[in-house]
Image 1: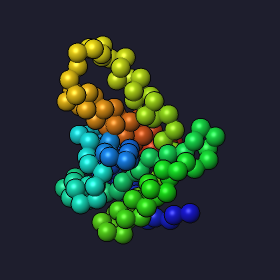
Image 2: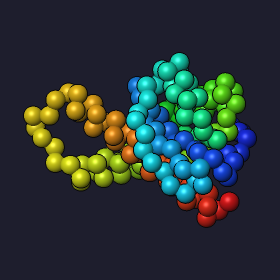
Image 3: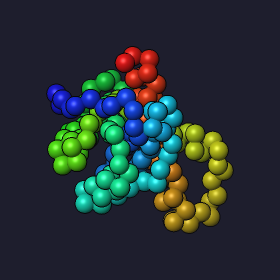
Image 4: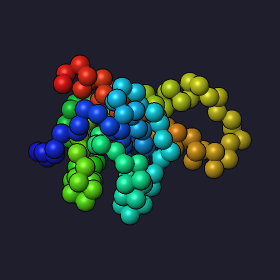
Length: 152
């Protein structure tokens, strides 16, 4: 079990939906009531670290990729390692939060709003994936904010 210092109740909080190549990002307002999507970030630590520092969060919530049964998936250790790295190198409070269904809900929400064009270019498809990643991060962070408000 990983134990991190608690995230303060004021200040911007980042939500991260961690993938193997990229990271979906969301940020809260300083009162921690609303989560908004941000552009995705690369997964490479050097780039990710610089971006996290620039965003200057009070804390970070990472999606914990559990199976529908609640059991840890193979990606859980990678996310836990990243959480420990953030806590150690950036001295930031970090929380792991169950992300089950956020990626699926983000895809459904994105494709419900957009009709896919069969002639879509690779660049626009990559942009779509980035929007889905950040939407998943936004759903994750908003759920965490509401859970925290309802159960301090």
